Image (cartoon, rainbow, N blue to C red; front, side, top):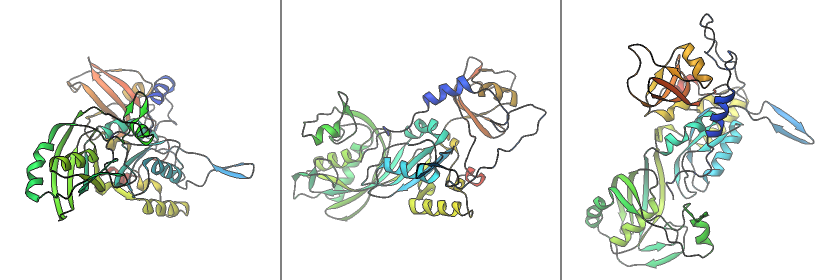
Length: 378
């Protein structure tokens, strides 16, 4: 059960370079940008039926992929890999691009943020955010994978008391040194640690610092199990927590249940079960709903970043990849990363400094985006 970043998430860097090089401004390509004398024009209505556009090739019918932009926070069911989840959502939305913001193991359930289209450019901001997990530790056994799916490697008849567990928690709070599980995605000379472990090789991983903001004992239903909640930073392994706590408590431990309840700005209220998404897709296909209702805006991932509104003329320059000079008393005095908007519409991620706004990632939100109702957080 890794909390490490996703390794197969689509990066926006190459797309960003193409955006800066090729995006010449055109009114019909970017809603809201154009001559100051022209009224704001809404983007063309998008067919919400993802099954509408198809091509015939031989005896097979293939649907054309379409531009879909936004976040879907899947309440991932147990047994599904993160890669499978991305493939399912990409199919449901018939989207051109998709990626996830942090691997969630098949044994785990809960929040798996999936970025569609231009939202893939904001994935790093979600991955760098805090994660919250609720997990159950089974005492008395240590396993080679540090979870219930592994082979038992050590056993103990000792069971920790509630008092002993509570006394231990401060040692696992704050910045600590943690040795990742042998079955993890960390690379060793170009090979994944879990691949080496499965091949029977001895895997030795070095300890590294991780930050655990909160660790609490939620429940102790019986002597063999304890339920915890942890809120932690990037790179922390819950499985390693269970392993290390068990050893210090004079017994052994492994994870037997895990649920992720927070990833960056996305909490449980944002999660959508897979069956609800599939039902929404069916309603959209029959004209009774819209898949836009399942999308959260691209900028939701940027909650912790200041927003900067610009004029139509400055937006046109930024959209072409050109820097904009900051003028006047209202010009921001701070520096750093901002996300730029024009008339409430996301335009770019940029750096402010030395009296300029320098675009780094330009967004092209033509296509299916979140419905207006999803712009307000629950």
